Length: 276
Image 1 (cartoon, rainbow, N blue to C red):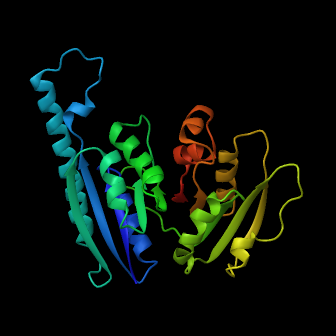
Image 2: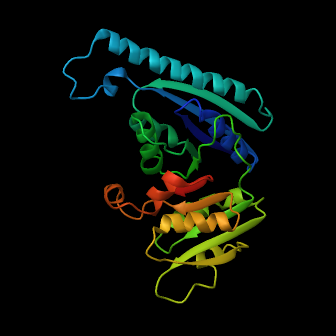
Image 3: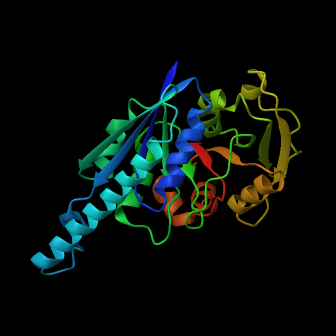
């Protein structure tokens, strides 16, 4: 059965890594269609409300800037799509003008997986809206691809998989739909945090019932940020992909108080497959 991946592109320098991640995910299924989405942000939405007057020259500059960004994304797509095996992977380029918050959720309804770049700092409007719409609005698993040095290729991933487990329903929603991508994994490790109780020894029931061959890695929750503890553990066991649920609390509470998901989104150096 063929799968559909939605890949909204934002920054031209990140596009090759995000597209390569889509290809690697396509290698995990029988066949795939990769729908690449580029959104031109209307110039009037990029104006700071406190500005009393915006010159025509300024508006023209914003339009030219957006046009140049989209042209670079299209060029990256054309280079990448020309290297794909046509028998297994098909591609489509779609370009709209509007806001990612409005456009992305509708396009994601037909997708099996959404693939985005990891947020960078300082975050811009296109990045913020794309990230929020993918995680909160798509209702689909989201693969977040980390940045690399300029021109650095994306390392292979999906062979050494780490699952961040917590019995709160989020992990189940993230992991179960993703199991089909793990068939070629050489190793699967379940990282289960615990606090003031005996370390968990058995696989979580939803995973054990499906016959998942995985190792348990209990991880004590201390006073340090657990997001960093989780990333350190994933690195220590050699994981090249982290699977986790997204946002235990509301987005507002995460923004105010921090949280594991927010930390992982900001600092993960390996791809992260998550679902809200």
